[in-house]
Image 1 (cartoon, each protein chain N blue to C red):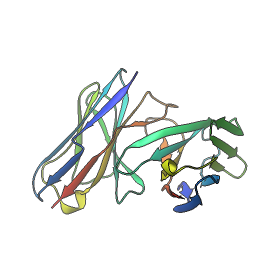
Image 2: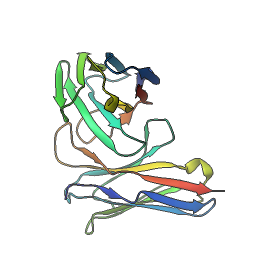
Image 3: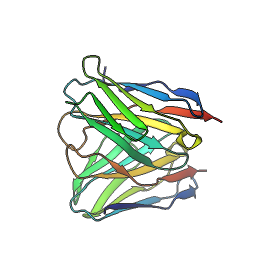
Image 4: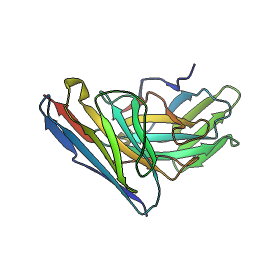
Length: 112
Length: 112
């Protein structure tokens, strides 16, 4: 299929780790991205990973890429209430201006 | 640094009225520009994109149109709004292929 798939919801307790998963479609995708959308706001680019990398860490965020399974994950360590948002993964697929395909988004709820 | 401005933030319009949403980008030249719609805080639907002045590609035929009168200006329009046009409209720009999208803060449109 052509869909980038994510689970719709995830709830975690404050201080725990969150893992948001994404399955993408094109093994030749060059970049994979994670965006965060807070209520009523636009999408904010959180981090990205190039397809020749397995892992990227940026402070509390860790991105893991499994190219064989076309699986991307975002781990948020020590999750805070301010991390509550919708998280979108996106894959850069093919050439041209219209080459970024988004997942449906995962709503992360952090329970105090 | 580059910035993207989108206005208005919220808009309430009656059915049958016209629409004009504006988006401008600063700090970059010849960006790719995009209009997305997001329904009910979920997935993104690409409406239009542009790779240059006067060049518009439509992804989904509907009651909307887009124009790019200047390099860093992108306008979303409608001659007569429908109830189904209600949603959250997001403008975005990118520096080209292999570059991520950067989003504006969005416009919440309610058609009554």
